[in-house]
Length: 274
Length: 286
Image 1 (cartoon, rainbow over the protein chains, first blue to last red):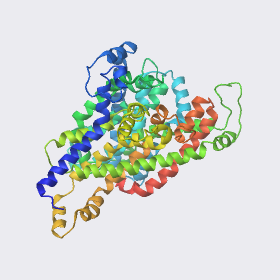
Image 2 (image 1 turned 135 degrees about the vertical axis):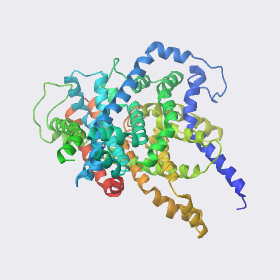
Image 3 (image 1 turned 120 degrees about the vertical axis):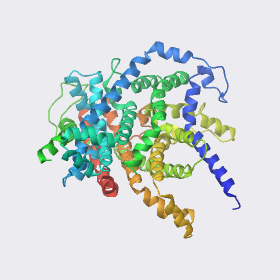
Image 4 (image 1 turned 180 degrees about the vertical axis):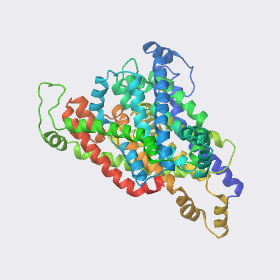
């Protein structure tokens, strides 16, 4: 075909933007709908221009205090990620630098535990949490989220740690560093990017976790996923309110993701996927 | 370093994960052999394999197994192909590349419940949904997506959410591909397809393995999307394993049968896991 280099470039730019806009459109549409009245939300043809209203956000806030749920989401996703990192770092360190002949099998076994469908153990976990008096507490969610993400975190950290040359750690040891110093002063600073992107992924997964937060929490420890689910039950056309609550629930993590995407990409580049 | 320290460092993660797996699992197996209906707490006792028999003979069982596998496979194919295409497409420098990247990644951060509800209402609603509006505009008969293509609709929702993940991983991986090698191939007369097939795809081997592994883990137990959209229907046409067990446990209050279902789900997951680990496991841990 007779396209010049410049035309080809332009075509590719247009295609890229087109793809980006198509992928993003549903999100844009939800945010737009959240500023409509219920009648405008279901109008045919759909309205692109209208007088925006904040009514939906006010109604959502009146019905259920958004900030309680938002704080629960923040505490559980950051808390669980921190807890999982604390458990995973020493383990991944040992596996990466002192592998035994079982290390590969252990890692694959860990990943395979993630394949157990949560619903298969709903009853036992519910009863255990109830016995421990932890129903509808953030503690329960932090522990469960940490355990759910532990396999992926161990595996990602393992692949980052493996990139660090052994000699650097060995020379630190020669200088008399203890194991803990070796990890905190040498290994962690060297793998900062990888650890950060692991943490980011874990935070996103916790924030969006729906199964356990819906089944184990009520008003006290409910996270934003539980809040959204509570708006899905009544059948009917409350799209504007649903959009408002969805916007409120997703905005923090989407914005967080935008700010961190460079970090995420950098972290992934030298570790797990290279 | 002595081997005791090494074991001690690994112990927390291994022991905790083991307990997290084994305690609920043994309870599930125990529950699956007793009478345990939340509506009739007075009925108790060991009943052997009846719960299993009841679960297997459930009219939804066979379709649940098939739907689970179809769901995982179709989403994998769509996301890997689309993610790869998008990653290759935007892998060049142009103004606004950062913004396009953000636009492409964003759906991954959306909650599954929100994802499902927004597609169900604003796109797939047979009267007011955007798809219907577009169809009518072109003079076509609007479709009731969730009623006519329940499983396909869920595949659309999941693919929208997970294509960005595949894209993110592939894009990162492409950036580490040495452009000089590609140029050398070009000088040797390789065309775009040959370069892609024989250089880019092998380079992406490991990231394809990562994408397949992580997505399979998540899609085997898809629940929220089905729960808020089709409710498993019409009939059992969009019921997967996770949802079938859920409906036994929470809609029919039969914890015994639900536990037997849980055991089946775990067996199914393990079969898939064995295949997967054979297929991609080796590239993952070296």
